[in-house]
Length: 88
Length: 88
Length: 155
Length: 155
Image (tube, rainbow over all chains, first blue to last red; front, side):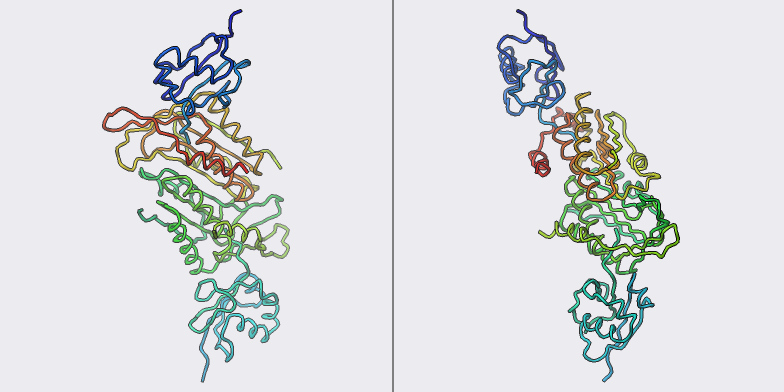
């Protein structure tokens, strides 16, 4: 059974550390939440590990809505990771 | 011994009820505070009595500074009486 | 902390909010936030001909000046502009302008809010309503809520 | 209560505060109060070349739209305008505009204040500082105070 495809977007210094603005991956088995996706990405590469080194500071949006790290990815087509916002 | 001269100004509906914007009077003996001046004026004429019929609603300025009814008139050259303010 | 630039006018003629805002901000790189308040003459029922604002010349400027000093002492402001009109004002026209500028937004918001609360309750202005139907003009009654609002700052 | 007119734009180009204010107030006799907030690019030390604002297109508009709906539901507003710029912004230039109009001043002040607090903490924008000396640009760090400020509205 093949996993579902999901788009990931990175902003600000996460984008810089990871070296790309977006990518589409196939969700591996056992990755059901945003937190699990962060752990899985961090294990793949030093750039990701550096970007996600302090997971508590990372903000998450699922389909463009703010979400907590334990939110499920089941019905989500786009995940975004970014630092705390500094607009306004 | 003649009393001191003091200017009195009236604004808004106090001015209308009393029928004048200002007047200068000689402070009668025994009138030492704004409240005593209100009582004394109210006794002189129906227009004043009508204007001051609810003394608690009257605001007072002594030399253009807000003041309480028991404030002394001794060093004051101008007293103003007016309703609660409605600017802004 | 540098002193706030204070502009204060009590006048019959209208004002240009954009010109006043620009004069507090143009070419400045130490201003991070501007809060501008404009108060207008309302007429929801369509029955008002105009408001007539009576004021106590001299004391009005003096009281507003005192309020500006209090605001400048309480918040780190770079500029403060207060313009209050008197005379006859038609529905939809501007009555009062307060602009506060600061490095940070909270100071600008609070100072403008503070000034409006106290302008309402301590600046000597009185509004009279002239109706279109020619009935006797009537004085606007002060709202207890306005006094309540000032209590927020007395802590 | 009539629905508030909401204008929302995320754009690279500058905005004209006076035009936006006029479009919410001109010819209206049900507006008693307008509060306009403008946020500027500061540079007190004179070392900044520009701020670069990155944003999340789509989500930015969506989040600001949600904030406008929340403000309209919470206060009796007649109009609400939010414009947030992205891209490179020089010291002294405008970054963000919020205007709230209402019958009464308290609603206009609170809605504008609320929107600015939440724009800071929930609209997906990130500021990067480019210095004049050509050193590596650095990301502005979010302030804990901004999160604190939003707690004021959670009661």
